[in-house]
Image (tube, rainbow, N blue to C red; front, side):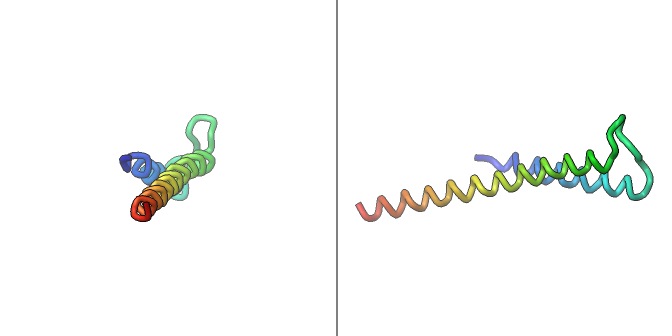
Length: 75
């Protein structure tokens, strides 16, 4: 397993923060027909989902590995 999904999630969250900051400063109002706030929320939500999913899967694999090691020691 690599960390690429988590890094992509962090990058998406940074992009969302940059979009929100640009809207706050008045540099950008919309991206085509979509308001920037909606786009920032969507991108940030996808980023958070990627990060949390990666962390949960890594935790699950760690628990499975620990259970297999404990099972091997008993038998």
